[in-house]
Amino acid sequence: MPSTRLEARAAEAGRLDKALAAAFPDISRSRFQALIADGAVSVEGVAITEARHAVRSGNLLGVVLPAPAPAEPQPEVMALSIIHEDEDLIVIDKPAGLVVHPGAGHAAGTLVNALIAHCGESLSGIGGVKRPGIVHRLDKDTSGLLVVAKTDQAHKALSQQFAAHGRDGRLARSYLAIVWGVPERRRGTIAAAIDRSTANRQKMAVSRGSRAREAVTHYDVLDMLGQPPIASLVQCQLETGRTHQIRVHMAHIGHPLLGDPVYGAGFRSSAQKLGAPAKMALNALNRQALHARTLAFEHPRSGKILRFESAPPEDFARLLATLRLNSAEQ
Image 1 (tube, rainbow, N blue to C red):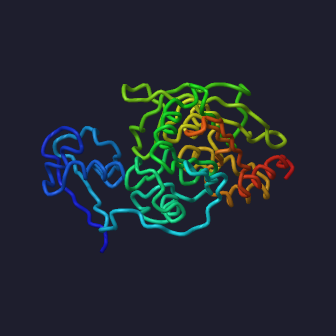
Image 2: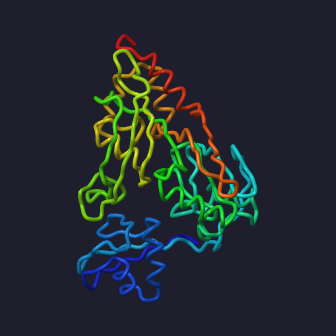
Image 3: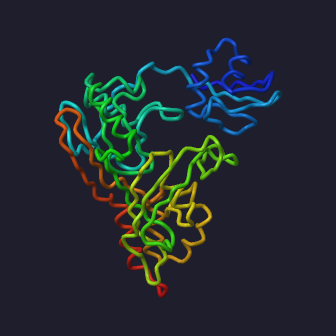
């Protein structure tokens, strides 16, 4: 059965979820809140993902009701790169292109589906039906390390560590990013609050608005790439964990990630300065050049600090190698 699209005009100004519940009384407000979070609701044709979004009387509200699906994600056997596993948790090296948990447009084929098949009923249920065991996540097109809880005790303990973002010394994580240009300061901290963009609700943006949330990223330039340098290899450490944080912050200081179609679109012309090998490698990457390289945390049962490191995948490594050889003569 295909999805169904509903449309109605808001009867009065107010919160989006309330306006939808008033317009479609056969559907609960909580159901609309879930649909909004999944990106299935629009206002005047623009996708909105916040239930509290303010609508005006007469605004056109659009809702895409997905086709009926099983209430719980189904197990799917797929190859997983398992770095570590014990009775409490599992550490995965996630490939780019793999969605972490089911959502709008991704009802199956996610990491959660694979974990259900691999772990059976041992996954923690705290994350909810669609997110069992999920403590944190990576964007679909970001590769690298991810820890998943197999017990409720582990889920609570790991969630506390991620909520503290390493400020209590128990959690550490770093990312490798390839960015356009060379930051003026080779090492620095970007402290700029982030909120959903008012111009494009699908994007995040640096904001001074009252709803913006604190966001802090520490970066180090590890290598300048090319002769003359056209890009840089940067290590980023998160002090907070906002949606698209590294991508937004690096773009904010004028050095967006290579291959980022959302925050680096203005730098597409820079690709014309690349030699043929680097240009081919960038096209083959076909995603933002971002990799979750290291992950360290306190084991919820033993209290020991576990540390893991992941080498960049082949597409990332190939782009890095060709950029190092890139020169104006190519």
